Structures are given as structure tokens and as C-alpha cells.
Amino acid sequence: MDTLKDKVALITGGTKGIGYGVAEALLNQGIKVVITSRNEDSANKAAKELAEKTNSKGQIIGVEADVRYLESQAAAVKQAIDTFGQLDIVIANAGLGHFGSIEDLTSDQWNDVIDTNLTGVFNSIKASVDELKKSKGYYITISSLAGTNFFAGGSAYNASKFGVTGFTQAVMLDLREHGIKVSTIMPGSVSTHFNGNEPSDKGAWKIQIEDLGELVVDLLKMNPRTLPSKIEVRPTTPPSK
Image 1 (tube, rainbow, N blue to C red):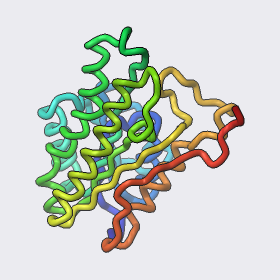
Image 2: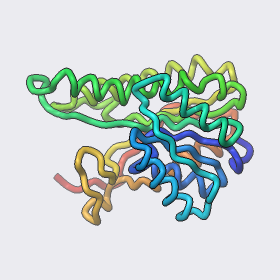
Image 3: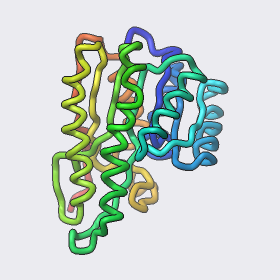
Image 4: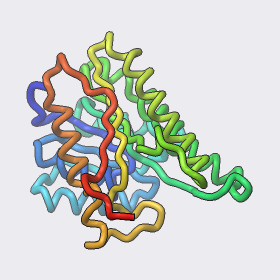
């Protein structure tokens, strides 16, 4: 994109973690931002906090939306258009995890992970593709190194992230003829509250959310002729085992 100022981005799951870090980075570039959460109060609280941190009053709104449902994502896209007049960037970030042996994993846990992490990405793109065709915009999905590396106890999470990685690459081929760029970012260990983790100085070796915000900005600024379609991101120096 030639200039990022006044572009409009929709970030699913933008109230904390990676989505929050990306939202902050985009606001600092002059991009208008819509963040979503299943909880309206959380969405509004995070939007207010981000506006204050980045001196971006009037440039960000919080929206209640559930990526598991296409109609909910379509409503979030409509709210973005109604508020800011266009949509240029969609960051499909919302995700969760349930972990455990297949012997113990319940069907409800399986459905929760797949519906949020994988179907949610489908819904986010499906609901906004007409708008991004107009703007020749950019989709960025947040997958994981778990989308290429399987591990015991990760059957649902691995399945969802393997799916996101493959889905995004196929969508990239579908949409490039419309001038839409599509990338997936696959982070390793990130310092967030994911899966009950508590960010602290002990996690300083991990990828930080601002690092991923910086990466997203770099992708958006890249020359339109060039597309890094799949980006694996790891901590430089993990602790010794």
C-alpha cells in the first residue's frame, strides 16, 4: 500500500494479545481501526484504552462480534463501513485453544476450537471479500507454528492451525487476480494471556505483541509487486532445555 494513513482495518479478537498489539501498531501509522470481541464491554474498553495510548480519538471503535457466525462478521464489516466509509485491511486473529489427549478432548471443546480458529477465519474473509475487492486490500491471518508442527495434546489446535495455514494459501491464489494480497503469519511462543499464561519478565525471551504489530506494518508497507505469503516467526533465543 502506497500510504497507510486513513486506511481502515478490521481486527478480530483485538482486545488483547496479538490483536491488541497489531491494533496499536496500526493506529500509530494513522490507520483507522475496528476491533472485535465476543464481549461488547471488552471491545469498548480496549478501544478507549488504545485511543488514549496512541492519541487516536475517533480513529478506533470496538464492536461486539463472534467470528463463529458469518452473520455476526457481516454485521461487523457493515459497522466498519458505516463508521469509516471503507475497508482496506482485515486481520483474522481471533483464536483460542483447548488442549489434551484425544481420549479426554470433548466434542464441545473440538467444536469451539475449530469454529473459532478455522471457521472464524473463513467467516472473516467471506464477510468482507466484496469490500476488499473494491479497495484492493490486504488479508492477514494469524496461524501458528502449530499449523506446521504437531504435538501431543494438540489435536484440535493443530487441526485448526494446519487448516488456517492451508486455507489462507488457497485464498491467496483465489484473490490475487483481484489485486488483493493475502498472507498468513505463523508465530511461535508469544508473550500473551493465551491458554492461561501470565505475561511477565520471565517471558522476555518470547515474541512480544509489539513485534508482531511491527511485522504487520512491514507487510502493509511492502511494494505491491511483492507478497510474503507465509511467514514463520520464532523467538531468537529460547531458553535451554
